[in-house]
Image (cartoon, rainbow, N blue to C red; front, side, top):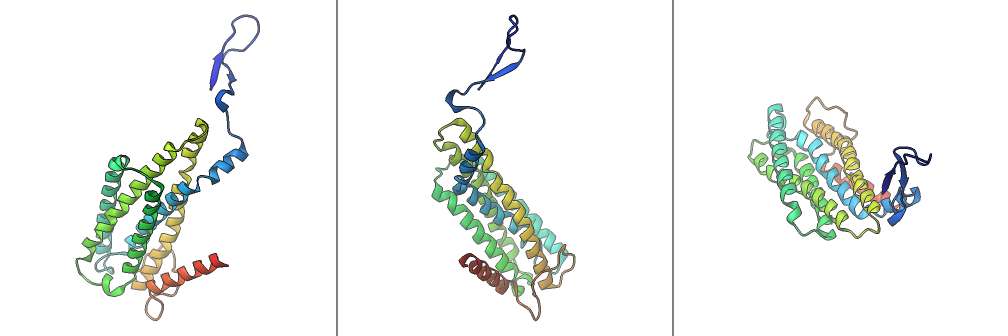
Length: 245
C-alpha cells in the first residue's frame, strides 16, 4: 500500500513522493520467498502444463497429418479445419459454464490424464495405415474427441485459477504472485507441444510418403521400418528407463 504525500511548506517531502507502508506485510516479496512459493505451486502448474502440452501436441501432430484418405491434401485440410472448429466450440462452452462446477484437486488432475489419453488415441489411429488410407466415415467420428479436447482445455483454465484463487493465502501479495506464476504451465506446455507435434507430423508424413514436412523424421518409419504404434511404445520405454535410472 502506498500513500502519496505532498508537503507545501517546510521543505519536507517532495511532490508525489511515495511512502510505502509495511502494514499487513505489503511490499515486494523477497527472491527466496518467491522461489519457495513458486515451487509450492507444482500441484497446479504441472496439470496445467500437461493439459496444454497434450492439447497442442494433438493439434500440431496427428491432427495435421490426418485425413480420409490421408494421402489426399484436400482430405487432410478438411479434417484439420473441422477438428479445429469442434475444438474451439468445446473451449467456448467449457469456459462459459466451467465456473459453475464444484472444483476439487482430484477433478483438476483428471483433466490432464484424459487429455493425454486423447493424444495417445489420436497418435495410435493416425499411425495405423489401414485406417488412414480408407474412405470411411471415421473422420467424422474423430471430431467428437476433438470437441472433448477443447472442453478439457477450457475446463483446466477455469479450474486451476479458481482453486488458486480460493486457497487461503497468508497475504494478498502471495495470492497475486501465485495467480501470475501458474500461467507458466500454459506457456511451457505449448512450446514443448509444438516441438513434439512437428516431430510426430514429420514421422506420419514419412509413414505415408507425403512430402512437405518441415523436418525430417528422426526415426525409421514406413515400409520396412517401424510403424507409429511401435515407435510410440519404444519412446515410452526409453522415457521410463531414463526415469528409472
